[in-house]
Length: 236
Image (cartoon, rainbow, N blue to C red; front, side, top):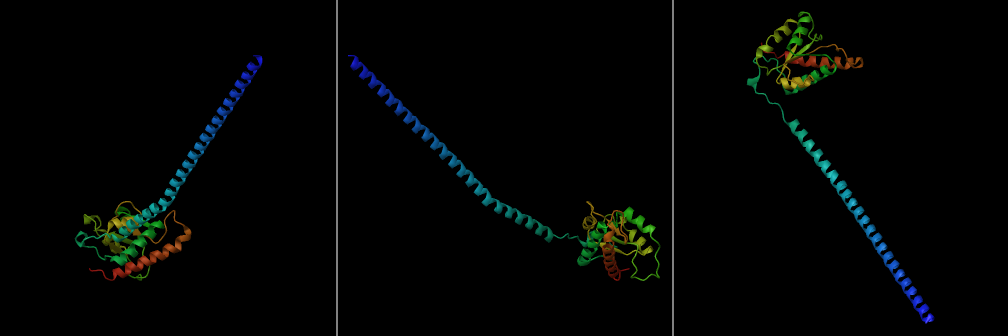
């Protein structure tokens, strides 16, 4: 009896050990499966991230190029658009009036004058500068540089705002030129608003760089040549 009992106990222990081993094997298999599933998920996530990155990288240049093309198109359109002002909008005494080619040279000169602090802006400032300059001297050669060059906008209303300036200029021997647009004149003079009149002076103003003096003297000389050429065709 004792022998049978010990055998049955041994059998039970063996069965328990087998069950435990099987249970551990099943658990291990489950852990391996879970680990494998986690690895799969990680791989999947990484592949998704790579796909998204590839999409962004491939799409980005196309979007950028499209934007650049759009900006270029807008710039081209702006260049093509020219400010057309009807003759009826110009003051009747707009003489000499610069044509398109001469206007470009004049406005370029105004830009240079603004850069070198040699620009008077507005009726009040220009009239004050003209009156300070000496009276006209007929004995002076036409090639002698004047005390300034006045540029007036021809699309001013009412015309009385600038009608007295050409007479003042003639009294003081200062050449003057009309350009069609006050908006373009204001832009060339580095002002946010349209300008009716500006005056370029031969000397540099305060705050201008000394090293660029020769550059402005050359620019003023070129502007004076344009003014002399236009002055030859003034209709009295």
